[in-house]
Image (cartoon, rainbow, N blue to C red; front, side):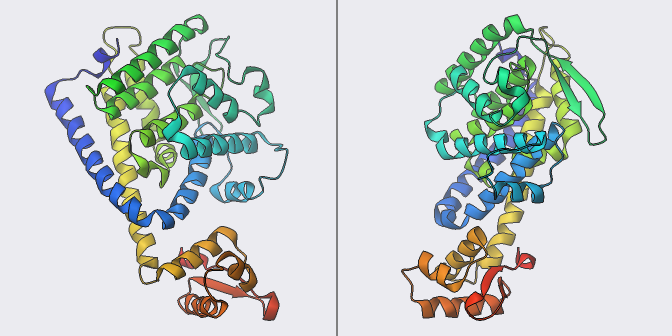
Length: 356
């Protein structure tokens, strides 16, 4: 039933195939690079996770900045998050982390989607009643803009049809992915469009769709989306994002329903992500390329756990002598990779923000 939506004239199909070929070419190159640099890509992944948590919630109307979010995530021992924005960010972060840590063992099922929805809304008090449950009241896709205005983008599946349509969608996706007849990027894009059109839950559907986009991409080898925020790309193209969805949805349940513009938007967004990742990685690697592996490890340790004293560093890098580490610290200070605060035993070291 979904094949009609992704059947296009030859010229359009060729354009999409060319974009997929470019994406797959980068995927192969990235796998090689990732194996070589996996230890040092953790920082890019950390930054991307913060940006994704911020962007995905801001698309839905939240207002926390990435700086505020990083501060919030560094204080996760707090047991209660009072503001709605904080609750949504924490829920998104926890769900995304779960996906990135376990995607190779996750299967796309209705039960898992329900569980993910529960985690997403775990901290949200007002959503307690319907966590993990399909909607019982009709809802609509509404765009929320920074100035507070809202616009209805399209209507969604009626509640009594959600079970049927979700079951059909999940079965189709898993069946097609197992056959290898259709490229997985076509299938993933179709899944996201259909999920948003169904809008199965009362709230959280947009955020959940972006979580599952990441889950499916990394699961099928597009690991690079862990290191740059796909959600940030969408946030910066919010108007085009909604327009692409509307182009197909306006003909929902008719023979005219066609999602070419949505798939093109989806693939173009991945290409933009790749371009940003290449730029970011080039900048990142050029900064550290002249450092040896021990010095790189020291920089990443300080970035992750700053501020640190020399005694802290010696404890965490106990396989190296204190004298060697002191020499590395002096070198990193001279290269302005790190900063020194205080004197004597109270001296602490932090990352030099101007170097990042």
